[in-house]
Length: 225
Ligand code: DC
Image (cartoon, rainbow, N blue to C red; front, top):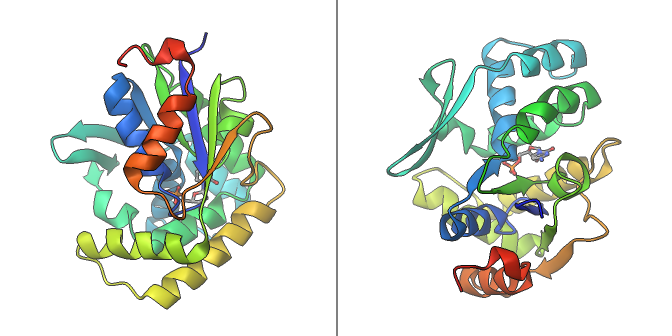
């Protein structure tokens, strides 16, 4: 059995946290596919590319000089050798990422990079289309949902903890707009794979979501039990 777990869902459902905890417990690798789209958005911004220029964006996507380095205080992301970890987490970057992500050629350019992230002993992949496109043959798929208010509150807490400015009402509004763009795009929209287990995390703690995911994993993956 292929050792891949996919976790898809919109922003603020908690998939990043659960993916990190799963990868840690299993000793597997982690793919934060959203970070790739965010890096591309930053690179496009730095190079003053037009955000409707699919050809230029996909060309840039196919030559992205990005490096994910696990360090003591988490994964650091480098773009052309420059640490962009902080800039990557900004809501502005997330919105731009969602804009570059609508283009089929951009998604095609990033596909191989994501599939190459699969390494022994296994991979936990987090994103929007991990279970439907990038790892459609994964044996364990999850799709997390939560209402917009719960998601905005989580993002608010995360941003504040990292010392960023945030406004709850604005956050909820931009989350809703981003979901709409991600869900309505023609290629690889935000969608549960038909064989994904769906979990509504609105009223659940991190531990409860983790437990729910863990119990649903194939027994062969749960050697730590
Ligand atoms: O997961 P995130 O918030 O870091 O993602 C930022 C944006 O990137 C998201 O709004 C849409 C895009 N994205 C995508 O289209 N496909 C993915 N697999 C991951 C992210």
